[in-house]
Length: 233
Image (cartoon, rainbow, N blue to C red; front, side, top):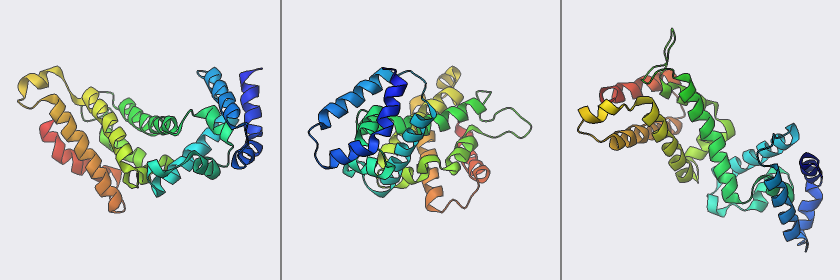
C-alpha cells in the first residue's frame, strides 16, 4: 500500500479509532504498532498538506497544554482530545510524548535561531544593509511573532524545559556568529564562560520583557542588550 494513502486512511479513521481507545478496545496495541510502522515507513518522505495540518494541530494543542500545566502531568489522551485527532493518527506522527516535545522544540527554536543566523552575513554584531540590525534583534522579532505560543512556553508551567533548549541553541548561535580564535588568545576569560554569560543574559532579558507585557519594541530591547554586551564581544 502506498504510504501516503495509508497515512491518509489513518487520518480519516482517526475519530473512530479514538472512540475505540476511550472504550478500552483490545486492538489498542495493534493500532499503535500499525501507526508506528506507518511513521517509520514515511520518514524522509515529503509531507502532504493534510498531514502537515494534522501535525500543526498537534503542535498547537501541545503548546497550549504546556502553557497551562507541567509537562509531566500532560497525557497523550489530553493532547489528542485538544487536537481533535485519533490516537493512531498521533502515533503515525510521533512515537512518544517525549518525541513530540523534541520535535516541537526543533520546530520552534530551529526556525527562530536558523533565521537569525541566515540574516547575519558577517561574523559580528551587525548584518549587512542600509539599516543594520543585530542578530539579537532578529531573534526578538521572531519571538514577538509568538508562533505556537512560544512566549507562553518560555514563561509557563513547563518553562524550564524550553528555556534549557532555547539557551543551548543560543550558545551555538553565539559561538558561530561572534567567537573567533583570536578572542581566546587575547582574553583571560574562557570562551565557554563568555558564551554562557551572553546567552544567559539574553534569556533573562526575554523573560523580563514578557513579564513586563513586552512594552519595549524589539529594536529598543536590542539597544539595551547591545549596550551591555558590546564591551565584552
